[in-house]
Structure formats: C-alpha cells, structure tokens
Image (cartoon, rainbow, N blue to C red; front, side, top):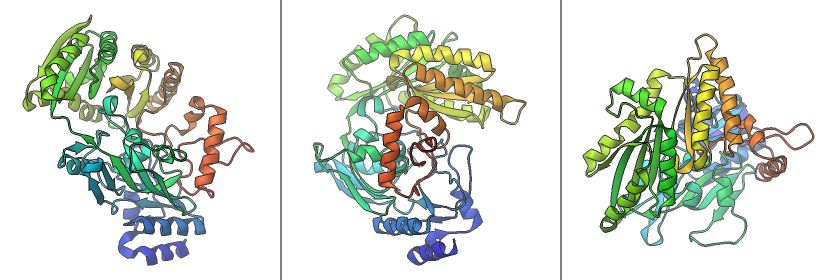
Length: 467
C-alpha cells in the first residue's frame, strides 16, 4: 500500500491526501450505524485529478468510494475494508457555469444543494430536488442516490432535472453523457443510468442541472384527519383534481402522538393523521387553485383544515412536521429509518400492515413521508442495547420489506440501497434484470474497484461476476 499512497501523495500533496487515523475515521461512516476506516482520503479539485486517482487505484488493485458529506443512511459510502480509498468531493465545490437563458447550471459534485438553490434563486430559478439535508448534502450525493424530497410530487427527481454529466469510469476513462438541451435522443440514456447508481459505475465530476423558474406565489394548507384511511382518501382526491401540489406530506397517528408528547403541540384530540399541502403558481390564480385543493381535502374524516396567509403562519403550520425528526432522534437515537414506496392508493394497506407488525414484534413504528409519491419513512423505534430489541427489530424490518413488495412497492424511494438493503434487491428485481445490471457494472468498472459490495447482491457462483 505504500507505493499507491506515494503516488497519490505526489499527485495531490500531503494536504490533500489524508492518512492520519483520526482523519480516516472521520470519512469512514455515513448517517447509518456502519463505520470502517479507509486506507486514506483523497481530496481532488477537478476532473483530471479524479482520472489520475482512479487510474492509480486500478493499477494497484485498490478499491475506491466517492463520498460527499456522508448524509446517506444506507452505508453506501462506508468502506468495505481498509484497502479502500475514499475520494471526497468536498474540494470540488464550484459552480462552473450559470446560464439563465438556457435554464441550466453546471456544477462540480461537491457543491451543496443549498448553494445551488441560492445561486439559481438570484436569477429567478430553482433546482427542484430538495432533500431534508439540503443545507449540507451535496449535488453529487443527490445524484448518487437520486434523492428528491417533497417537491418531487410535482417537479420530479434528479433524473428528471439533470441534463448531462461528466464522469470517470472504473477503467479511468473520461465520459460525457446527455446534452445541454431538453430534447435529445442520440444514443442510450447514460445520464439516468448513472444517477442513482451510488458510485458503482463511475465517479461524477460535473453535472449540468436543468433549472425551473421560481413560482411567484405559494399557499400552504394543513389538514388533520380522523385516521390514515381518511387522509389517504383525501390524497387520492387531491391527486385526481387538476392542481398538482408542489408538496404533499403526511404523518400518521404515532407520529402525531410523539410530537404531542414531546412538544405539547396543539391539535384535535382525536387526530389520527395529518397532511401538509403546498401549491405554487401565479398569484392571480392561486385562490382558485387553493379552492380546488380544499374541496378535495374536505372528505369524510376531515377534522380541521388551516390555510396560511403569510410567512409566519406558514412556519407555524410546518412546525409539527419539522419537529418530528428531532423528536424521533431524542426518543430513539439508534432507530432504524427505512424509506419505502408503494402506489398511493395502497398507503392505507401498508400502514395497517405496519400496525400489525408493530404488535407482532413488539416494536413501535412511526410513519411519515411524501404522500403524493407513496413514499413512507418507516421508523422502527428500539434500543439495540436493551434485551432482545435488536433481534425483534430486524425480524420486523424483514416483514416490512416483504409487505412493501407484496403491495407492488419498492424498497427504496430516495435513500438508496448501499449495504443496508443490498441483500433484499434480488427480491424486488428479477434474475434477467440483475444479470444485465452485473454486465453493465462490468463494462463501466471491469476490475470492480468502484464501491464494491454495494447496491447489487452477488450472483451465485458461475452466474455472473460479483460486484
């Protein structure tokens, strides 16, 4: 290992190749409970340095993981062993180009989502993906996981909002995908292939983002319902009328009970579910748009509907939703936070099944998420250091995933697969699809050095090259 470190040090200098044990440890974990120190941490500043790093790693048989700020929850950026180099994109944090006339922005992967939004807003635009961690998460991470956030219900995910990429394959080859135009059908769509691949196919070094004009006005509605079934009926009615919300969030009864207990929040005593709805558009049209949404939201089981008229009222309505995540961490700091999605119409069935699983396994489950996409954040509240709670939680999680697939859903809406869900992937994808994915991986990364052991399960011996 000394030879590869010497070559990387000659390329980057001592200040951009971190080998101290404390530094390595700091880059060896993400927002999961997994951690392992890497061989070293490389801090490139541009595309050409990434090319040189990948080629050096390939020449010496060293594995490589690209890492943003480590806000992921599935262990996708955790090293598999101490022969793994972490390539941190934190020094690749420049906005290279901003062209309002073409509605695009070219950025390096280490730019934060928040920095992109501020730069775009100055020109009257925004980039739709808005994960909860937008203040610190990077564009590279957003692309690696296809992380979207609440606005995806109207504006889509990074796959719908990225025009082109520049990247480096596992063979050390430079690659350009996509175009700077919103139309283009030349060749296969490698841009969408790389987005969501968690760094297993290539290291993204530049991204051309498609910008969307900021809407001049917004309305916010908060609605309480008797139970999740009433809320789900309202979601179906809202999604069926012509006005498409730019956010449609929900919390279940357990989530409301937790927030009520933690912060004494005021809400109807018999509230069993909450919806947060936002619409945006031209001020002159918003009242009519709001009326349409309100009509849809006023269904059987609706207990209370509140509309915000200014920023202070908007903040007050969102207070319950924003208080939930801190409350969850206080109550169960080592909880399992899963991210699944089912067809919107089947949300009540999933919530009912989750309640049954909570009773069966004696594990409290709190659900919230993006109702317009059927995307639930399922939180298994347990203390892994107490009794047999970890064993019961893992058994419960196994059944949760099974229920999601039975309902026609997917194991990950936006958190990715990484290590945590890798062994379940074969339950969702068929054999032919997995075989093709392994073949694609081998084409991009012939020696398997890019983030090995993540995203795809290994094939049995003789059926494909493990990744």
